[in-house]
Picture 1 (tube, one colour):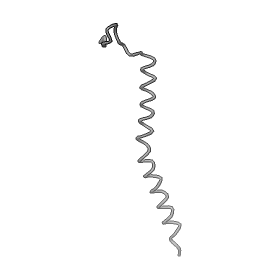
Picture 2: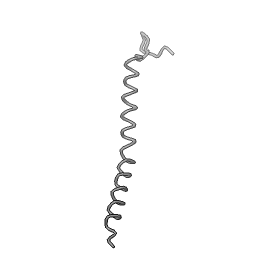
Picture 3: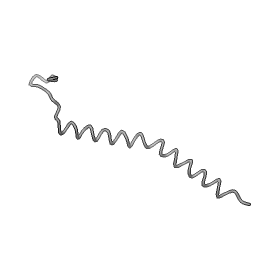
Picture 4: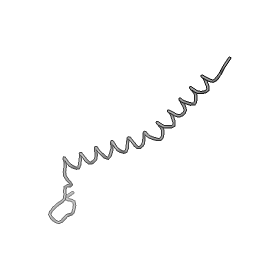
Length: 55
């Protein structure tokens, strides 16, 4: 009985999991940055005439 298909499929699953673990934070940061920029574009920077925050 040949165990090669099991071994290779286990390696493939491990590579997929490792790749997902490495890339998920990058994708999340890109989505966050894009959402933040869109929010800033819609709301503006809320700066007063002196350049300071009006809050």
